[in-house]
Length: 445
Image (cartoon, rainbow, N blue to C red; front, side):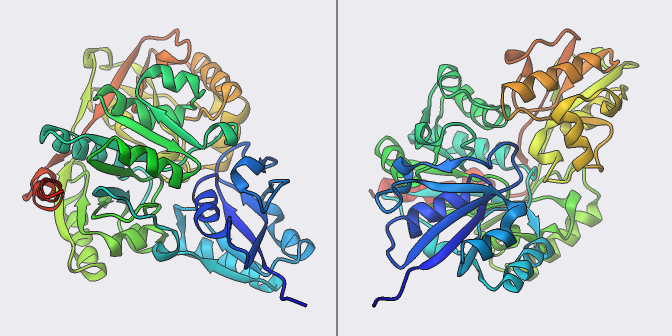
């Protein structure tokens, strides 16, 4: 009688969990994945990883449970191993979950690059970070601009955000705003995709990153991995750029898997040096040197611009910021709040006027008070966000998100947009590094 396969539960948040399954477990007869658990993102539990994606060994698919049921699941499903597969959490958080799993009798596992990274036929530049909200998006845009300026075809591959019907999201290609509507994208997805589309870059995302890789590398000279949260790349990078945030000093060594990115980086970008105390920047330099002494360090600013800033002076402003940056990214404010205060506005606390899931978000993240996170993981939550904006007594709305929210919701109040980019303060610049490490390599292909 043969030994039964190792029974596995994968803890996730509709991202790395599915990727780890696809590349390591799906066709592996030594393992049987009996469940996924889900957290961080609303309304992703209670689903099934569908048979069309799970493969022939899982004709019924794989159930997805709330993470709160993990210990019961270990016992009831007789799990031998639990794989932790999501990001942007403190090291202590990971080990508390490990302790609960071990006490329930199972092994606890973290899977690394060798087990989970896919290798591309074309060069890959990966943009990662030590925390959500450090500045990956503007860094990715900077990288894309430098490569396209050299005549290279670029495809941006974004970390997964599959919040809809998974079987319809296996491979998603975005080349226009119509594609965003076709895939019924959430606010979070639009925030990541629209700035690339505005610059003429094709974006890929989805669930099956092996199939995505085949499609993306067929039409590009270079792939840019645009990481989510502080996860490490799904594709093996020829150049890994990791963004550090001096406003959250020490997080580069106390969050998972941000510390992994800190240690793997070829280039360390210390962002936001224009708004951070100089002593924090120097302390971060010392921390990077201790974690990864071989990394090239570049200091960069995140210059903020405001459309129609004269609308802010002396006004009551409702500031809307990027949702993940404020929630599990744990920032108290973003570019919108900085811009509003700089131009003389008074920030209005939206908490008393929040409705539904927006009120629940404030309860879950009590560090927030003078800003409104742009939560929009579905039509109902977008309506609740819209109702919260309408009810908050403000003269003007400051849109500090990467997209213009007026495109997807009715906004009765006057609004101004805040934009932010990346500008290197030290040399070499990212363009110079890319010229040496990536552009030169493509010439020999």
